[in-house]
Length: 152
Image (cartoon, rainbow, N blue to C red):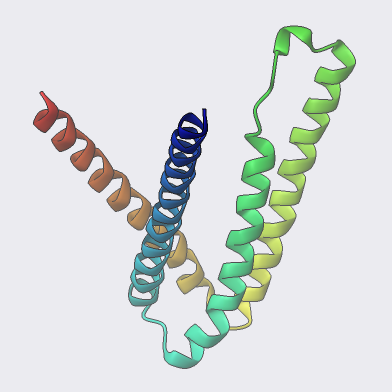
């Protein structure tokens, strides 16, 4: 009996360790992508050290708030068949509120950026971000396609 308990404990410990490593791996992966994005945007906008010092706190705050809104908007709708009309109306009001908050967040972001960058470079930011996202998506698809080929 004690031997079985030890085995179960060891297996649980192994499983917990695996989940912890996976979480750490995901976090380090996110950090690497964030570092790549920072370098890509800094280079793409040709930010001076002085501009970068002012730009990145504004950008990082904006990005963090946008991620929070995204998570709220994309929260799972559980058992939609069980929603009452009132629940559905409330969910729709929440979506509209999230869109309003997103608009206000973008407006503030652009106003804050205008204190350090001209409008042309702010527009360029959008292009640089889109280019980075396309590049990352392309690399992901290529890796995924290569992974599938190697497992066949």
